[in-house]
Amino acid sequence: MNTATKNRQGLMGPEHVRSLAAVETAIDLRLRVDSAQGLSAVQQAQGRANLGAAGNLIGYQIFTASGTYTKSANVTKILVELVGGGGGGRGPTGTSGNDGITAGGGAAGGYSRKLIDATAITTVAVTIGAGGAGGAAGGNNGLIGGTTSFGAHCSATGGTGGINAGGDGGVGSGGDLNCQGQPGESRSAQEGTLVSSGAGGPSAFAGGGRGARFGGTAAGAGEKGSGGGGGYNNTAGGNGGNGLVIVWEFA
Image (cartoon, rainbow, N blue to C red):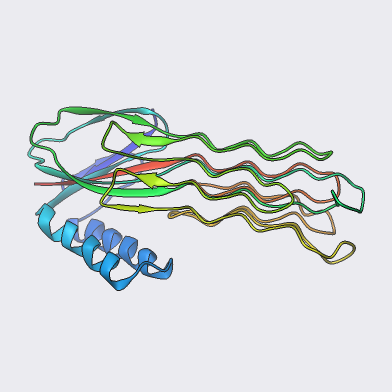
């Protein structure tokens, strides 16, 4: 298990959050990202209402690998955010034609957010969906990302791998807000110099891996649930990013 845990008193993980205001700012930024990703005004208002209903923020825990959430002292409500694993990008052949030298990027994992009454919770199993492997060179599709879940409360499936077109985004379920992940970009219709393969789909938490392109730039890997970029001219696609769970804790 790889987690980071923070509270008002100070360091309990790899990064020091100096004050409650810093964490509250992080939540505000989270909501700003929602806006940038095209959530409606009603959906954004619901997110802010969830935060207001939760009470005083104590801290948060971040899971980048499967493990167990253990509730901190004095917590009565938790707000869970999670994303499924990103899909891997395709590894194309080096031959022009139907298969081509460019390839599609993998899609992002789905996203789910849920406000949960934590009075009866002690621990919850956390499963992090692995990112899908990028397709090997020679005309191989990227693999699908795994499903991320927070017990039986909410979950999100992984993005599909890139083919010649970009993969399809995963789907969130069980939350107060559930979103489909962004698809990967399709391969370029033009083949030859100064073209690139499709980038991976961006997730709720990170941008997608870059598509490989003419000149030797390799496909980029996804992170935090985003998709991997497509390979170029008989090179491998980028791996999708592993999923992520954030648990915000409130008194």
